[in-house]
Length: 260
Image (cartoon, rainbow, N blue to C red; front, side):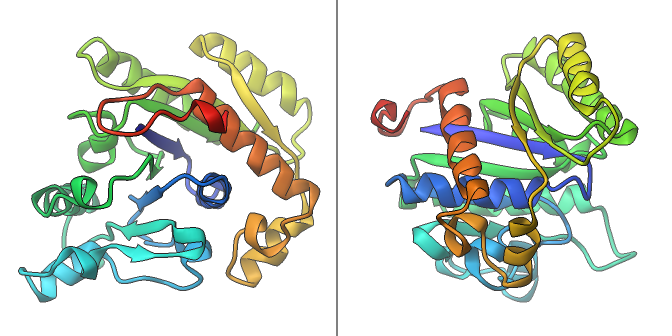
């Protein structure tokens, strides 16, 4: 089983990337669970084809909510979970993620669904409290960061890399590399390459700007599902393979070599 956390600055296209990677992996025959760890709760919208109820909302209304109330099947059989967050001004978003993780663990979500791959989609503007949960406590083994050549995106990536490096010494997750979601910034490739070199990791994929992404977002679907024969869908399939190749198996799941 692969346990993979994908971080990135808000608005960088992280959730779009994760959703398409989930769809590509599921298309290849893998059982995928995508867990959205952003309080906006929009990570799985394109995969599920709709907004799904969040774990935090469900357990707030019913502390005895069952696993079927928290995990929703999306297109291609992707298992979709949204942690959610507190009502505005009513609490810490990080604490909401912690509460959601604890509930999923209490109900043995992993043991029940037996996913081959778990993808955590995590806001990367901050790396504290609940936002650090996927790279602590054994939840995620590998971390990838979505970035562009924009200064604030690279700054967030650097912060995430530093947090992963600190926790790596404690036996937690490792940084697998950067995913460049291109924005057309001047000298973008060289800027991202330089940042990756400073972090000591590779750029595992450069995703080009493509109008199919916006079209499919408007249609509430992934590019892999909505425009499966497009060049961009092929890019996401290749990214899914590279992520699997750059990540490690952890105990408890099937071997994935035949998909690589």
